[in-house]
Length: 97
Image (tube, rainbow, N blue to C red; front, side, top):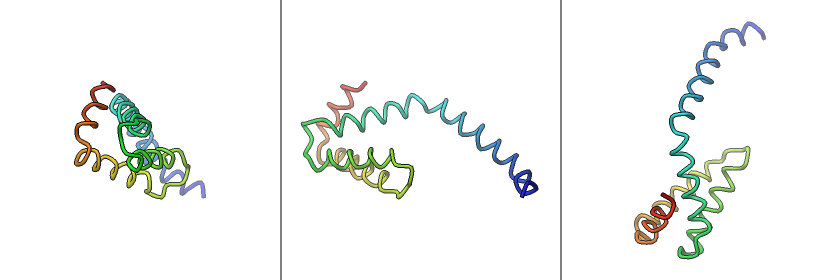
């Protein structure tokens, strides 16, 4: 068992270092994206169905089990915003920046 762990130790160290670097590089962008998702979930200018997509997506992000529902809901919500609710989306983005 320890021999197997020693075999994967360099990969685990590389994974931790890489994830730390990516977190530091994209921290501002990730924070902005989460603020945008939260704003879309609570903004009354959007239809209730689109807001619920963001609410479900954000709630699924908080769960320790990954079903892929969070990416699906957030992605579908973004597609609806960009195609059907373009003006509101632009207003929300300008308010966040």
